[in-house]
Structures are given as structure tokens and as C-alpha cells.
Image (tube, rainbow over all chains, first blue to last red; front, side, top):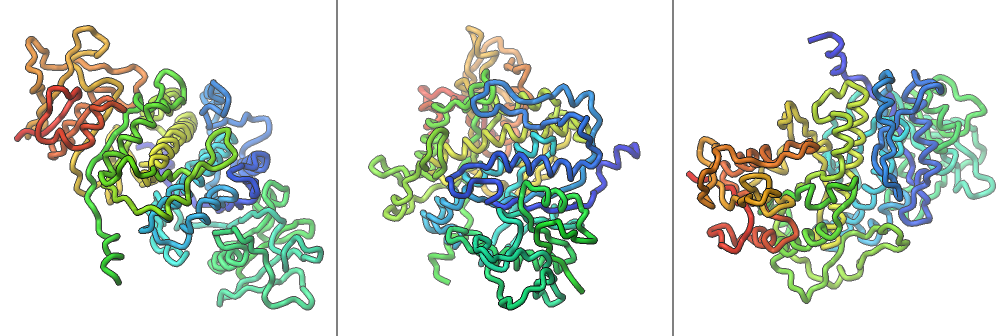
Length: 294
Length: 294
């Protein structure tokens, strides 16, 4: 065997886990509608972050060769691959929320509460999965159009299962590798001290997590702030709302993995993806960083 | 724990593996087009075979609650579930071919020959998977509309991989359970002694497989038949053609699992699904049975 061939089998570390918020990539108030514009920008930013060797003079080599709605021809530029060098890309894991996909089916059937022995819940499980798979396929296609070799994977197909809303069993072969940083966009700039629609809401720019897993706001230094930060929990959010998401981000940060919560499809998101915020958070950056402080 | 609750965790044997041929559920000569009519009939026949307790006076409880193309409302009858008893269904595994999905992407990139270190092959892998996932989602939706609680599973997501076109690794937890019978439809009535478009082609109604794995035609008793039966191999069929499919059916039959090759969406298919052919093949049934003879 040649050394060159062997290198392919080396496992490169995962650089980043990106979670795209459901509200960022779908139109949350319109049933099963994708926010095409945001999804395209997000996909383009991910390409830029993943492929540092890529320059604007190079063609984007799209990998979605399927027909698009209303077209009879495939939309690929297959011949381009033959004449182009392989651009090395760092390994990203992209996770996404459901937004206006799946929530309707899940809340109608109560599938998130369990009870698959009931026919309504079982039907809701099937219906929810159809809806979120439709979204997942469109996310994969958007990434592929940007030349990102993405593969959709369903937690269910991977043998994951939950109990009491926590993961009960999971094959972590893909996920347990070294991870550098986490990143979670929502439809606002980051986490606020109260619902961001309120006029005096303050963006929490830095949250520190201690050894005991407890978190506290470091920047800005807030006066008269309640110990318990108010956060929005939309009534229809079957996946738990902001409070749960911060608690989960704190658990990740405690492992030494920085978590960025930023607004998708903005320059702030691109800067977080690029890694430039790892040592210092500049004043002109809007977002929330959650990290471990020993 | 109640006895009733415990029963859910008992593993029922899988009654049947149904393979839907790509040519049966898609329009093979039109890129990425589903044969909606056939797919609907096939799904309805599967419901009838799976739910022997279902009667025509009962409502079909559709499980696809997603919007259909061009509609703004979901197409579910969710309230019906509350008032309906759970109809017990036997366990089927449904597998399907790709037809006019995936083949274009696979053959353009040569992905079926391997070589994922080449950028064209890697892109072809992504593009093929997008195309076949689109088809799979539509098959799942068609089954769900008939009230069949179906879950799409990709071999890739299950950790399957191939080497030299054979399965190299697979988590068989789902598949290695007891299986009663196999069933593989194509776009003709069954397997013929020569390309079925030729005027003198004879349908092979029964093929016997011996302990050594070799197969021979039992019915009809053919005169002057070549030892090697001629079969059609379409030039663009990246998955191997009829010869490979018969050889694989013979391998299954050797395990004591009957294999039926029938035309999808016909009464012959429904009769095979119902199990009525297990002891005797009636003269008015058109199809091919491949089974083990000790």
C-alpha cells in the first residue's frame, strides 16, 4: 500500500459542531416552509469556514445533481470535477432544529412525551419523522450545492433513543472524537437577560461555566440582575426552549468545548466559525459565548 | 409493570421482506420521476397484507401529515386516531430499488466502483444519496398515507459498508431476526428464459435451489433450454441486472426463505403477499418462485 492511500484512512479530528436553529433556517410561523435565503447564506458561510484553501477565483463544485422543483434537467456541473483539484476541508458536524417542520405533527400527537404503544403517538412519530426528514434533505441539498460533501444522518437510524428527554442509548462512534468548539445559532444575536422583544433586553456576551457546572454572566456586568435570567420559551417549542438550550450549552462548555450562540447568516456567525474569537471577544462582535473557566 | 405494557417489548418475528423494484415504482426512462399510480397500488396491497384485521368498513388512518406539493394545509385526519382501535400489523421489511433516481448520479461519477478519495466520486456519492433519499422519502410517505407506520432507514446511516460490491460490515440487529418469506417485484411478471421483449420468451414459474446453491428451472419443463438462462442486463443498471438478482435470490432461498419475483401492483403480487402460495403454486398465478429443495 502506498503512503498516500493510507493517509485517507487517518481520522481527522472534528473541528466544530454547528447547530442551525430551526427558527434560522425555516419560516417559523409558516408550516413547513424553508427560509431559502438564510439557508443559502448559512451554507455559503459554512463552505468558507470549512475550506480555508478555497479562493473566490475557484468554481463552487455543486454536489446536488438532482432536479429542482419545476425543472426537467439536473443542476450539476459534473464535468468541472475532472479538472479541479480536491480542496481539503476540515470536519464539521452540522446539526439543525426543526422550526416549522415537525413541531405541528409532534405537538398534535404528543410524541415528545413518549407512549409509542398508542396508535396516535405511533402515527405522530411517523408523521413527525416524514416532516423533519423533508427539512433535513433540503439542508443537505443546500450544503451540497455549496460543494460541501454532506451526508444526512438521522439519530433514529443511528440507533439513538431517549428516555425522559435525555439520550438513553447512542452509538457515539462518529461523535466521540475530538471536538474543538461548538456553535449554536438562533433567530436573535444571542442570549438576552429577558425576552429579546422587550425594549430593555441586554445581550449576554459571555457566560462562564465553573467546575460544578453552574453558569454565570461575565459580560456585561449587569446591575440588579436576577440570579435567574429570564428567557423566552415559545409555547409551541416541543424541544424545550432557551432555558434548556443554555443548560445544555453549559454542559458542553464544562467539557472544555467553547459554545457560540449567534445569529445565523450574519457576519458575526462567520467570524465565530472562522475561529478568530477563540482567544479574545472583540467589542464589535454580537453574540453569546459560553465557556469553561477553571 | 403491567403484563400489557411488557408485551410491547416482545420482538415479533418479521413475516416478510418485500423488495420493490426500481422499475416498478419509478418511471425508469424519465429522470427522477415516481410512478405514483403503481406506488399507490403497491402501498395499498401492502396494507392489506400487513393488516389482516383491517376491513373495508374501517377508515384508512393516514400517517403523512405533511403538506403535499402545491397545498398549504396538511393532509392528515389526526382526530380519527382518537376514536379508532389500534389495528395489529405483522412486521414487514420493505426494501426498494432506485429506478430513475440515483442511477444517473452513480453512473456519471462511477461511485459504484469505489474510490471515495477522488473528488468526483465523493461528489457522486453525495449526489446519489440526495437522489435516492428523495425517492425513499416518497416511498415512506406513500406507505404512511395507507396507514402503514413506516420508518425510512438508510444502509449508510446503519453503518453498512460494501467491498467488491458485497456487504463488508453491517449491524444486523434489525435484519437477523426470523424471516418467513422474501418477495422481489420487477417490471415484468417474473423471470424469463430470455429477454421478455422477445416473442418466444417463457416465464420461469419455479426455480429450485439445491444444497450446493446451484439453481435449476423446475416449471415449466423446457425443451432445448440452454443450461445458462439468458436474462436482460440493462446497460445503465448500476446495481447488477437480472443475473445478479437471481443469484442473490438463490442465496436467500438456500436459507429456507421462499423468494417470489412478481409484477408489482398486480393481483399476482397481492396473492404472493397474502401467503396463499406457500404450499401450492396454482396454474393461474403468473410469477417466479425460487425455493430450496433438499
